[in-house]
Image (cartoon, rainbow, N blue to C red; front, side, top):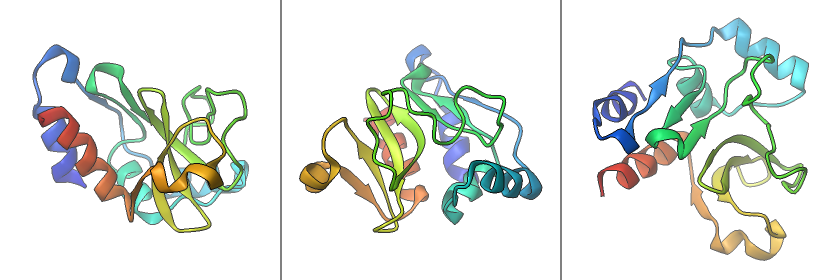
Length: 141
């Protein structure tokens, strides 16, 4: 995960600028899970332990934190409740939520439609490392 963050930091064009914040501690992550009644997947915890949230690609992408005082914290839904409960919202890219699907143990880019009808159309990843690789591919294409 650290190598992926370093690759994003190295991108210099204005629209590719990324901002990372101080890491979250294990106790902050555990407290957030208890307070928010959520389960954060291990590979996203790997990210949080290096940066407790981030703004990527000049603001086109944001990864959420475990800080209860942040507006952009895990499970923040900018679409006013259109995200199904089985999806844990971890961030966004453009107009899509970056989510963890608890049912299928996978990460997806979700749009505002009935998920069961469109899940085949959603980008799916087996872990958060693959999500970061995808974001890097967008930035370097």
